[in-house]
Length: 386
Picture 1: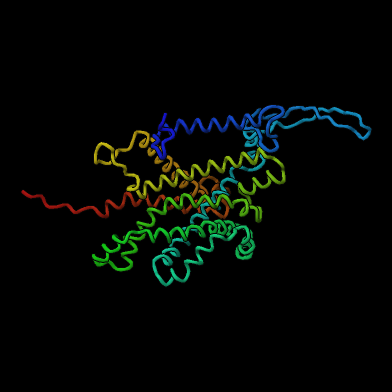
Picture 2: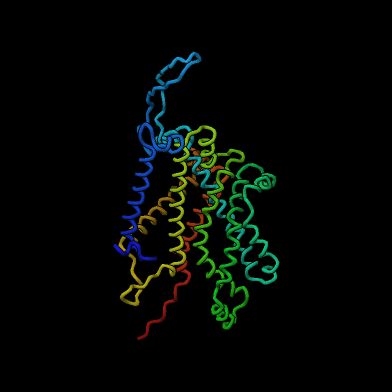
């Protein structure tokens, strides 16, 4: 049992799974204990029940009239809980479309933040003129309260989709640029001197040393920093009320007084974050596998992947191919109306459907590249010797 309290002690995958499940059950048990019963410790108007029967119950309501007479009436009261709230959100709140809109706004913000941050940070981080001129200003931008600049974005982009995407992109960018600059400074001089010795030009040095080294470390930073945009989703989606989970949770909490709906949407945010984190980690392993090559403790050979790793990889690969098939079908419907002109992508994502196309076109590009590259760089057959 001493391993449980050893500083930075190793935890196996099986132990992590078991204790993670126990931790979840513990939190759920505390939640139920605080919110259950006719007179809960924390009122259901603050902490709703995690689950209960989704029906309407009759409760007695007692009050005094103007003459001091006590009157008791039977009043219909909705037995609200977080699980029941999903039914209302799906039926009345158009939950799935709002989810797609929020995903479109946020992923669009990720893409724009990366497109803006990478060239800007490389210019400032690599060249002394720009580094001396702008790094101090870039570092200072991190202290800007983003909610205070919404008026500027409204003036520049209006109240539609461009406002939301660019506002979320700016929220990521002001933290991402200083991180990229720091990663550039962390590149070891030995690699730079080596390529200079080999006669590499400035561009060849950037391409062969700085870009691979920075992107390899930056993938972890992007995985953490992209979560920032979800913290500003209510601010972005509250302007213009175009829809999205942020707009939905604002209406449920402030206008409708439905904490059960608020908690239900918060759980969706958490699940999105966990899935997003797993996707980024999966991509990191695919693009930078050297970071995860662990040597076996009893030999110098690279440790082979476990059966669990192989099963997870298989299902992820299958999910990618299934997603590609669905996307191609829906994209053809957008262009040719083969499904009767449903235009599901445009309906769900509206002005952010370019995000969906960008993601799947990138997947198609890398899939094709995987199969085309071996053909392009195939070694010519050598003549057989007698």
